[in-house]
Image 1 (cartoon, rainbow, N blue to C red):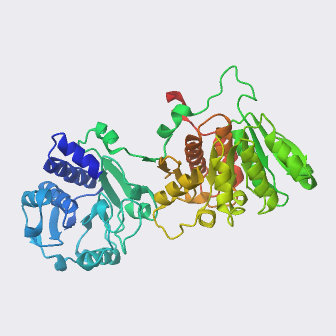
Image 2 (cartoon, rainbow, N blue to C red; image 1 turned 45 degrees about the vertical axis):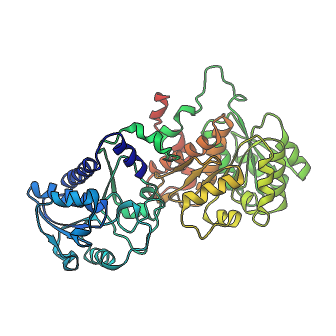
Image 3 (cartoon, helix red, strand yellow; image 1 turned 30 degrees about the horizontal axis):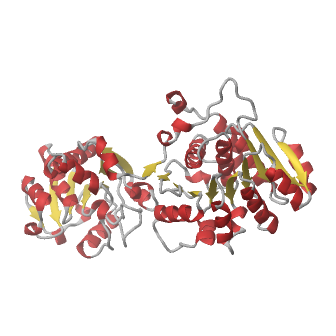
Amino acid sequence: MTQADQACIAAGVAGTVLMQRAGQAVALAMMRRWQPCRVAVLCGPGNNGGDGFIIAQSLRDKGWSVAVFLLQAPQQLRADAAWALQQWQGPIDDAASFDAAEWDLVVDAIFGAGLNRTVDGQALQWIAQCDAAGVPVCAVDMPSGIDGANGQVMGRALRAELTVSFFRAKPGHYLLPGRAYCGALVLADIGIPSDVAPVVECRTWLNTPALWQAVWPQAQALDHKYKRGHVLVLGGALLTGAARLSAQAAQRIGSGLVTIAAPELVWGLYAQTMQGCMVQAFSTGQELRQMLQEGRRNVCLIGPGAGVQSLTRDAVLNAAVAGKHLVLDADALTVFADAPETLFTALAARDAETVLTPHEGEFTRLFGMGGDADKCLRAQRAAQRAGAVLVFKGADTVIAAPDGRTAINANAPATLATGGSGDVLAGITAGLLAQGMPAFEAACAAVWMHGEAANTLGPHLIADDLLGAIAHLPLAFLSEN
């Protein structure tokens, strides 16, 4: 956004004009949400504080009762913020005199998205007072105390009921914990031309159908089942439900054929319950290797319920050597925790694509990097290291490609935190990959559809419910393809 602002100013739009528009946009969003009341505007030392002065005057012009508190002496303000101060026609109250309990509404124009240090001093006292009073807060750009780049709390942060930002959202609006502090998010148009976006070379997006709908696989009249891809799912001997969920999800999303490779001892269980899939028994590693190498099976899904054992490890390496597209989840990741480079070397020596789908624990075991708070950066580094698309799961799932493309998913409800939902996600991903969707787009689409399906089911979903919900999603974006 800093680059976008600079490009806009270089194109002839004054910074003061952008500030005026930003402040007025926030005031308009507030007037749409709240009735006139007593408002305290907390202004920081930079342009975020400058926006605050414009907001204050805009509200005052509409008859609201407004007071402005400034974090530093007025004469210390510079550039556009100093100009904005001149637009405020009321007094500046002493920062220490602010009492949150005296106000109906607080405007947080303290720091915004660019904070890169721990909050302290008077600003920390303001935040503590607002929290204690429970007063509603409207944040300008980003709740103060949240790092806009990664959503992390810089010591302490304000919890906003409404956050108004400009032109484009920041990662911190969607990454946790920042997302939980933003409340309702409004993105305001302040006149930055959309064609400045290529100038800033954005590589991180919000995961929506616009990101991948152009390559969404659609069945054609002359298609047959072999043309729509064939997924092989490795079944486990104990946790058989995991592979079955994955296999059914691959079917539901459109894979033409799905085969479960089942240990001979439990072949009957799989065969009896999976009428729509082929179930093939194996009793030795050699027999499994032959299944993995079968020519018309273009995707292998390994991990759900497979067990942390040498068989799982060998299956991954053999499928990689066979040139299959891979979706590796759960045990297929954990089994390489003691020798991750073995996996990464195997993935690097081939042209086929791979999607890895770790949750936080699996990610840390395989990649380390547990102490880095920036989820996007961790995902990007891991994807590059593995040479694979990475689906870093969680309430704020991040999808990263080895070339740096990154998407943040924000449509997943908390109800997905239930056993088996990750197995369904892995199956959706494999099914899309089997139909020819590129790995990054397939992973993004799978994550979005997984969340969208869950949103249709309400608070009591179990993983099995997702299978039917996927089939009935109203995919309006298909008509735009």
